[in-house]
Image 1: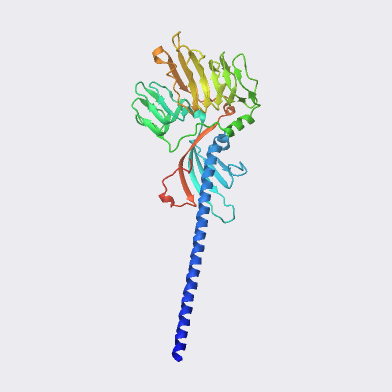
Image 2 (image 1 turned 90 degrees about the vertical axis):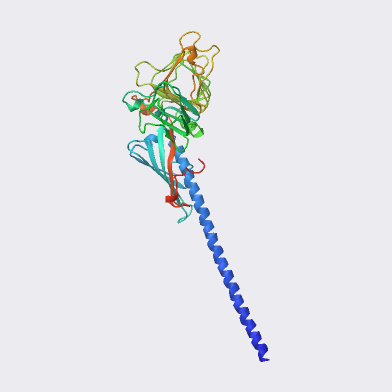
Length: 418
């Protein structure tokens, strides 16, 4: 009888011990699951805030395109971007921009994502942005750009006359001397960054590789609305020349719904203005201010293509800034240029767009045609009235808070989805 009771007691003790182990195991598992759940929640929150910060950096690049950004972020100045500036672009984030005093081509950006709840996860990105107006380029294209031997884009001692060229892929052709201010590329340069027949007028005196492509196809719906809001829209097709002049515009901006044709007569530019077209722009004759008129300038912007029309004269002179999403192209005439006499193409100013500048197939050397390119940045009395977009790209990028890897291990990655 006593033995039976002892066995029963031992079994009860064993059962109780096993029950305690089971309860402990369940408690430990629950605690572990809770910790893992919290880690997953924090991880997802961190990923979201990092994504929000990166999206905010992309929004910053978009905001910097607007024509007024240069004056909104003056050299040596500071600008804060948040929901009060644009509730869509800067939702749940804040950006502090600091622009170098000299040179003013570089902006430091500190991007902070904001948590939806007090004390929640946040993330901070520090980036260095190269910021330029389109007027700083003689050519900026989203294509392979050959630079013909003998091209002269820089001369004298005034840096204002030193033209800059950008293309994802740059090709310097061998032969006669090429003079240029600066050259930038994103993917390839040929034959090298320092060809023997190229003279660079600006430091570091060689072609420079950018970490990402410039967004030179920039005339989208947001830019469209900015120009549309600056001018009472004109309906195309619109024809402009010396006999069909535009009415005065107090904003120095004209917005055209549709195509624009400049010609058949020349267009002598008086005053400073930008003409924005949602369609193509066809150039049928010379464009530019009168001789010795240093205070007049034109900028032509097309959401499509700027055409050097087949009916334009064989001797064509263009002065101004020309910006087109699909670039500037030369249409082939019915009769090859140069067969009836003089043949020359002269472009002074700058061209920005999505297609490389290749005019030699129409203004051909074999037919005695010449092509002259000269960089000029308008600096007349009403320079601040020239309403033109900007170009920017991220040069350096670090996640300084809310990061997944230590800052010391980061290798200046580019933002996500860029």
